[in-house]
Amino acid sequence: KKCMLVIRSLYRSRFNLLRKKVRGRTMSSHSSNPFSVLLFDLDGTLYDADNGYVSHQRRNLFEYIYKTGIVPRPEDGSVDAAEAYWRPLFKQYNQSLRGLRSAGNEIDSEDYWAYCRNGTQDFFSADEALQSFLASLPKTQKKYIFTNCNEKQALECMDCLGITPYFDPTIYGAKFMNDVCK
Image 1 (cartoon, rainbow, N blue to C red):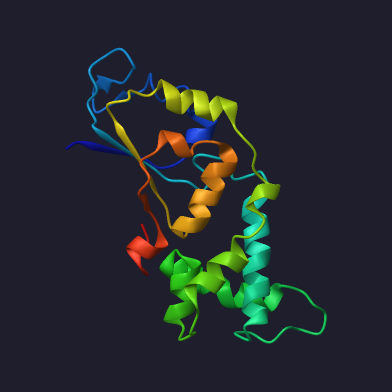
Image 2 (cartoon, one colour):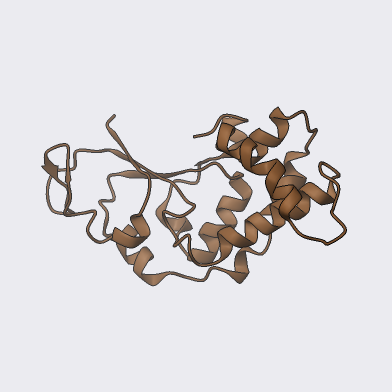
């Protein structure tokens, strides 16, 4: 099966995607489809990464680093020490949980994801334009979410956006990939 991975900037250019040339063929809902499967990244692709949720997650991550004792909390309460610890790990492993584990930290995945990804409903609501775009894609193309976040939290975000019905129920996320980054 031919597969297309929709990686970045879908939120900003989702309506132009149908008109762009993909490997020399124009995709539209009326022409023959060169792909039978579409893989969508979630974070910063199906929603605008500038909506505050990414910053919220990052603050939660730094608080998690302090809460679990990975790094002692400085007296001034700043996140600087947690960020200084996390940044090189993220740069090397391109995934926060994987980086923290690679540094020798024992981390419960469920606790980590629930803590770092809480508050989804505060940042997302039904996105009618995104729903319309997804509905316009050919029904013959299977659509999957492929993300570095945990499947449960990905589903929460999808539910808030109102896009769950447009995707196959199987989400390929952190549990599926274990500590391997997509």
